Image (cartoon, rainbow, N blue to C red):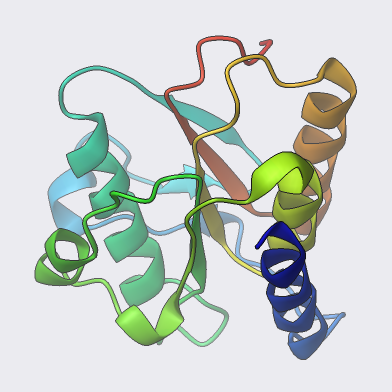
Length: 161
């Protein structure tokens, strides 16, 4: 299963033109603009925690998939490690399901799956393992910065920094 997810993620990455310029920020829904007026800074990591984390994650996916992308018609998003992600809730908030990739169980090679995806999408909503390897954390953080993707981490108490 992890091998198939890695193949799919790599195919998605390869389908995106390598020189595509990313926006300076990943857009958010209008309801979140009072809190995040410029959107989410491209290349950043954000932590989602608490009782509203699932709804906020769905809202971030909706904003990026509906309003992001270089032409303003929508960006690509991925949800990794959240098999119970509320796709219906996200689409109800305005998410474009054709711009959403779901990787329920990335397996032991989760960091490789995320690394392939972060090069191709605007936002990765991620639930990493309890204790991610510090080298994987550094690698994914650097890739997110380099490619202008946002890593939104949920349920990541062991994520350094």
